[in-house]
Amino acid sequence: MPIGLGLACSHAPNVFVSPEDWEIRYKSAIADVPQPLAAAKETAEVRKAYADRIDGAFKTLEQKLAEYEPDALIMVTDDHSEMYDEYLCQPQLAMFLGEKGTGTMTLAAPSQDAKTSPRVEVQCDPDLAKYIAKGLTQRDFDPAFTRTKETHSLGPNDRGMGHGFTRTAPKIMPKLDIPTVLIWLNCYYEPLPTARRCLALGRALTDICKKVDKKIAIFGTGGLSHDPRGPRAGWIDEPLDRSVLEALADGEPDRLSSLYTFESDTFHGGTGEIRNWLVVGGAMGASKATIVDYMPVHHIITGCGFAYWDADTKA
Image (cartoon, rainbow, N blue to C red; front, side, top):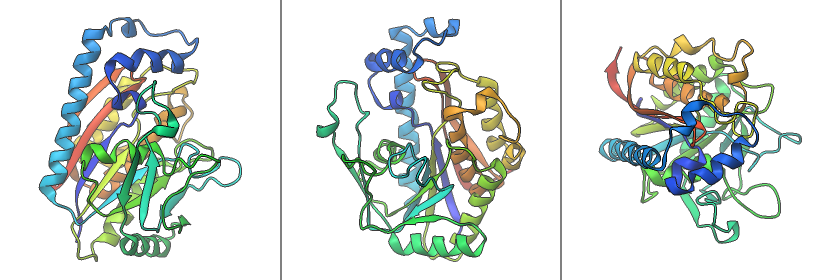
């Protein structure tokens, strides 16, 4: 049956930690980049209010997913060199065909030791993943596949799958009890997928899932505009973010097909993660996104957004 629910959110580290810890990561990420005047207005009280809004937005996504009661969840995010190597092999599109997605939450708090960080375990749906993989290949997509029993990262310390999965999954499904299909999209390393390709991927996923006798939801994480440790660290392109959200809210994701077709300093760094939202937008088609919240928070170093789509809400 068609994908009936879409979800999307940002996954910047500060979204998941106490606002009292935001200053530490903020200063680390901006280095010596001059900051916008608005950043100084984000007092402790203002940050606490933002944190409350973030918690509320995640609760809304959690509630929507629980109400939909899906049989499976497709998660789409990007790799930050956890499982794939920028130089040795960086696929444009990758899928996990194994049984269990695991990974650490090493960025949960500045004071937390990575070695003692809790692990997140997501039970996967190998049969659905393989079916989708075959369907994508038949539609001229060329995913890379990881076939190990569970996810493993590069390097001597096995961090597992990336934080785009491990930090967001518990927020929308606290029991981690929905069988999941894990999909990675290259959002950082040139050459990058076009916006048009990301929208097409979403449409392909919906087309494939129409023939599956399961209720399926899709969840994309990343973005919105941000450039941690880059030349625009701490700066947020609010007009860009709002243009993206407005197109999705209007049920017109194809208005975004020209993103990334021209050079802009804004498009570098983490802003490339908007591609994950485009996959969900493509999958949900003319369904109108409900924008739960949007916050251009400099101390989160991100235009922080939350949205959901009901398939029966058409433009």
